[in-house]
Length: 486
Image (tube, rainbow, N blue to C red; front, side, top):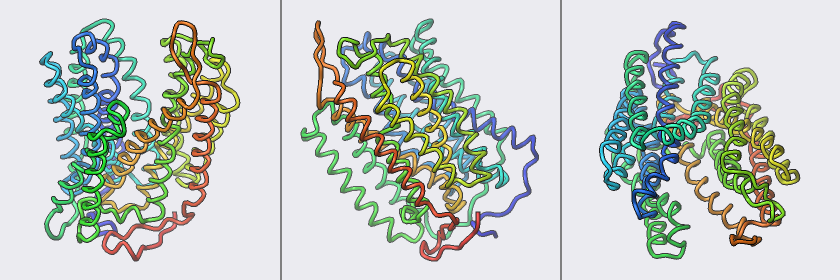
């Protein structure tokens, strides 16, 4: 038995490792496609159904189930085998796609989208499989490849979804999703070895899993409908308070459990805690770049600050950022393998800060905005690779998917909070143009760019606080870590 509670296995042949990575990339494509392609079909749903609030649940249901599945299925994969859980969530995703494709009843489409949400667990399960089977020296690069797939796949999904919507029916989006999921299931079944399972003592903490899911869903629900329903509405306040109360009870339960479903003591580990704090600071501002820059690009030039380009051109200008993110993921992993994830994180957050300082002072033409979006995309791709590497370096091997899943949950929650903060700051000062319509003023944009740039600078500061020496998390005691040099 080795230090991380798993049985050592011979190193996989190189050809097997290539096949394993191919299967994981296709699996992650399922998750990114299902999260992005649907936006291209929304206009069809608006034409079919006269209920914008209900249509919003096509997105919300996917997000809520995906958030819960990310943490719970990630941990179950650690406990019962990541390959087994990966096939399960891919199967649920494929089934959900077929459910949505087989009907024009809005409620059933939403139910299918909820089942598709199980795909949210794919990313942390992939990270866990990479750590489980790849040589230690190649783990950072391979995590970077998976992160790049997650980053770039979303942009590809928008394009593919648009093509399908323009030249076919909306149902074809779900059919394509199901086909890719089935392909991924076959590749995972054939190309990935059966996952090793750690030795367990005692009963599985099902109560911890049951408590966590409704608490998280209620909290995310309040964040997702707060703008539409009104933050002071009884529904939003009630959901928010109920979610917080349930999560507090869950925290108290998990802290006193000998083998918790989700070990919240991981958050107290310096490197893991700082990694999650960095991703939250970045998610609250910079990850919502489209909410700011895409509006500025399409805002009428008569406002004095807008660029006035078409939606198509704005999307085209945003595309290089996605390409840069794909390039940055493996590059950051390569850099982390040689210089350490700490230095990779410092470099990535520094580049991100440069992009937002640039946006603050230079945002008066379309091509300049495109340059800064590309720099932001590169930095984001690097951060998507650096943060999971920071976690994988020190988390227990039998909690890898759980720990990286927590990072995804933190990102989803803080992105939701950040979206509301950006909406508030953009609304602090507006300009009305002839023909109607109120748009953010130059002052409002300056305020928004400023606080996001400050948030990025805080992320750089937190990156420097990351320990230079890796301290492995002791899952048994969470108090007596073992020291290991990088």
